[in-house]
Image (cartoon, rainbow, N blue to C red):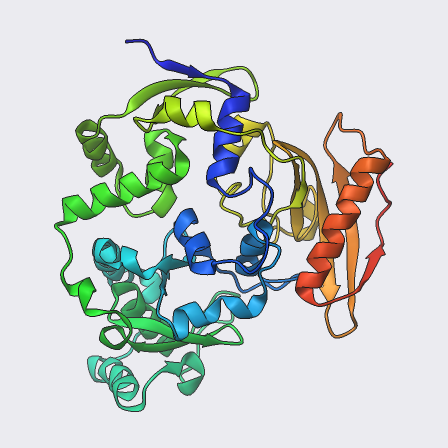
Length: 389
């Protein structure tokens, strides 16, 4: 049987829909845990340019979201746990039984890697754990060992120990205060269900299934990169066991690529609705754009995160937000904010080639900026860059 052909427009429509960006944004107070469950996870990030990435990602799908809604799901309700996918992320707690292999693999990697070799003796490592067991959740600030290097990412020995045990699941994030992580014993954070985990092959199979549910159409490499858990051979083994539909997806450049889709792909295509025309300001860490190769292939939109690129080498700017309108990227914008001074400023603006910024599109951008400013709790919006014409 020949591969099912899927047009570029249809692939974009499915991708935006599964990411919660296809229909009009959710109205009212959102069910934040359900939103994260639908996405699979939400990446968390330390930088607060206007608002932190995790808040922005959730707000993009539900404008009624506010920053106080997230952390109680981790620290009080225990509906989420924190661990590492491709980066630090919040993951639904019900996924925990199938996450045990990730604890094992990352724990082993941390134990064997130079980055996590703390230099502390076994009794010093044990003393750190004993303090947490006796005193309850502690942050890295409760310990006083010093980093031996002045490099930007250098960490003190006790931080390396804490993170090694955190990767292995021996410690877990109890809660966060002003984004500071507090470590507690894994057994006091994770429910008992985590101890009754499936065999490794079943864990990997479940995670691959869940990845494809959230990708709808994907190459084996995209399935592997979704969680950052499985190896390439494990994904091939999963693929051989699953009954999937072979498809040929047309990219933005007109080139078709072989991929795999869920068995109900034709029903999904028939039921998919047109994408809402709303203009959206997306975060650089948004799951819809995280896979830059997929982004370029589907949308013809080249994007790179330049926060850690030297200023002289940046193409765009420090913290640049893609602008999505309907199913196309129409530009990118650089923002910064001072909450205490009650302002947000546009410091850079770059329309996509060939995109005309008429009065209507400019007004839609202004509306989105006003909505975003409300999330950050500021009212004044300044244009320091030239306004689009």
